Length: 245
Image (cartoon, rainbow, N blue to C red; front, side):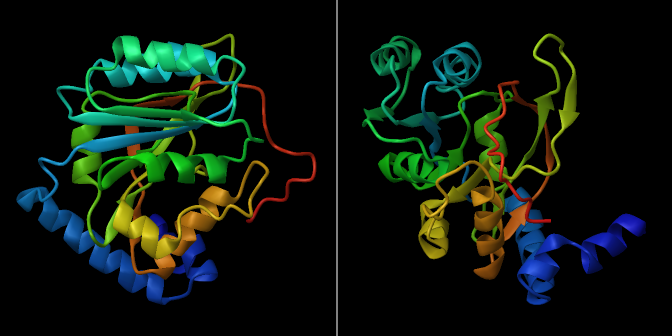
């Protein structure tokens, strides 16, 4: 009951968006239940969209193999926007060698801004159903099924991943404060405007988008996702970073 009371009265969307977000939660949850039976996205290709800048090793070691192993079975495609990594040709060559379905790669020298890079990758995607994913992730089996199940007209999926606490240990913690990964349709992104490219440093662009989904009447569905891992890397948080809440 305490968790339900917190969700109704204290959830961040009530403060940042307003009480009409409660109606959005109700309609989105209702559609999610119905879509479990109707499965409207069952045949759609899922485009995994990645923005990258000099994160070659985690991308090639963790993300790319975990995606490529299930790309054909799960009907996955890949869209990567690279901001002029020093070994961009190596990234493209690695994708070409292992990726069995549709893919697109573009490298353009520019300062890395996560909001810009992901918008570019999502615009490059050749389909309607998108999953935005950081380069230093491992994704779970049956990713396509999870995305298709958890993305609808009135809801998008913002899964909760586990993140690595120590680079020397296999110790993981649920990252409930993170909203950086999501699945949505291109139509939903057009309605929200995608990431605000005014965010040029690390942080806040994900929560800003999360709340704009709510503002457009689209419920961001939050569920823990077993097998979705964020691998350790040095922090990108600027010294002057101020949390939103």
